[in-house]
Image (tube, rainbow, N blue to C red; front, side, top):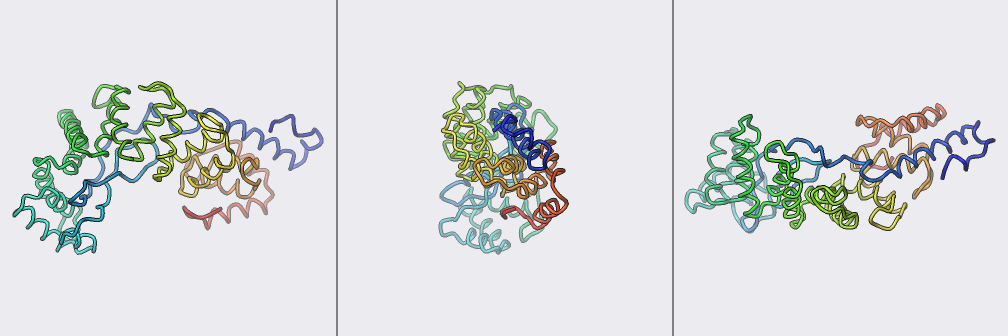
Length: 359
């Protein structure tokens, strides 16, 4: 689809201008994947998140909720535990009871998982007065027993410090947590070595830690490792492996991975070209609120590639992306070329839209 396919007679009409504009939009859409999504070379600084949520007694907390772009792994909600009064109370929202039972078990049995639960309840102020100092003591007690969730949480706390010494200690704790089985800690170590702010920048070492977390299906790590394979950063360039990792990250709900996967499928990079499948993935990520996906979906809707052409929907998705500070001068022109009635329809769709709904 290119400029030459529009006839001279059509150029002066509204539909002719739209055809030319749609051609330009698709030309931009077909850029290499690296030009279409956040580059891994400049991720956000590794910052600790809120303390890790306690895991079920039989198994540490699993992967974090995905997030757009690179960021430290987030704490996971407690998994469904084996029968345990403290965790049963926690799940029911009976936090005061949960704390009393967790403290009793921790004191009597020295159970590190109960210590983490007590720390979580105190640090968040669930059912009791928030007490960061008391929470940290419980985390430290659990960490002394090698509990990976406690180590991860303490490392996250230390990483917020301005002290270089504390940050160095945080790296060591993340390493202990990762070696004890925390995929979140392994992912954070990957970030640390990729960014080179706290530790030397070593993309190959970052890839090793990302791989450890990816092997445990940590969605952010799968995406991060895919971008290293995509760009040949610390690893041999491998678009096929990048596509495989993006597919898995997308299946696990990472919206940035879904957007990147849609781009490579649309372009046929490392996978068979499939514009209809790409459109489905763009829509999925767009519905989840990803601004880049909203922008790309607007482009293909404007051109009718992989999805029926719909100028009103294209304009609405563009306005949704624009509301998230993602500008696109070509789509601005498309909106400007709408009739007042069409523009009002697009704005009305955006006004009633919320993530998860169709535009």
